[in-house]
Amino acid sequence: GEQLGVLTITDALNLARDRGLDLVEVTDKAVPPVCKIIDFGKFQYQKEKKAKEISKTHKVEVKNIRLSFNIAKHDIEMKAAQAQKFMAKGDRVRAEIVLRGREKAFGHMAKQKLEEFKTFIKIPTIVDQPIVREPRGFYMLLSKGKKEKETND
Image (tube, rainbow, N blue to C red):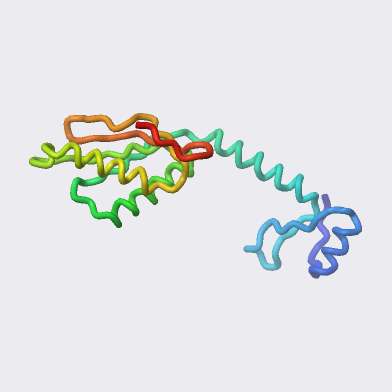
């Protein structure tokens, strides 16, 4: 409803208690912080509803993560962290390993690198497409899972 102006914290809390509602901080970036007197459950519900609506409008993209044959463990961890960020936004991840020259003879090692990459992803994932051979190397498609981490081979 109406704006009550600038109040002290104790006045705002007392006013909220008198109305049988909660004092919810909307933003702390403003000076003074902006608060609402509202039912907290209702506030959370509206926030979740808005987040779901935003996620529905998000167009799912396929993001590429390219690994090299001689990639170090720490670099795989960094790429996995980047993949997690993409999946958290709702995008799918295409992890590919590019083989050049004599590396093409060691396909089994390239597959192991992709499997290792998958183990570094800490959020639940679904393997949309298992490891596939292509002329320049291997790739697999991953997306965010629901609850438990699935391991589809």
